[in-house]
Length: 195
Image (cartoon, helix red, strand yellow):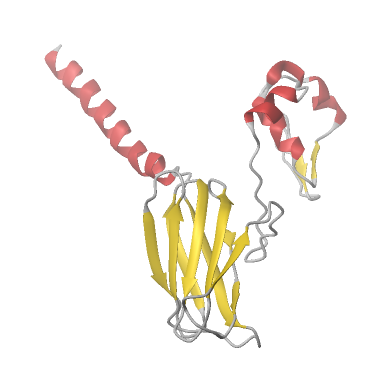
């Protein structure tokens, strides 16, 4: 009896240890990156970038590289103020920059030549286009989820909100389980071992 109990406990412990990497991989943190240039379009290396969380006042600092690129990762979602300073240029401040979970944000800055005591303030635009990668991300709010008319309230159907996603064959249109296939941008799906 003791050996069986110890075996079950060992298997449970191994299962929990096996899940730790998967749990750690689930993160809602994101990043802010961009390129710093002057008004003529030339890159500005070694500029100081300070990103401050407006809710917690926590700040992170980075320095642009020789190509004028900077990145600050592992940021929790929220509103941020981005301040950029470089010697011989006016300061740049962008306030109320909204960072969504797991969706990187790009904030480029064109600095003007002048005194560093002069600051150009920019208010973040709500319609920011992410141009770094071909990946598409969108935050779905709780209100949107509640307003969706989902047949059977199956959360898998939320995939249909994305462009290029459509339901599979008409035979599965009446199913309520998790086995409903989707075509994503014309991809094939497998059902009962057939394509």
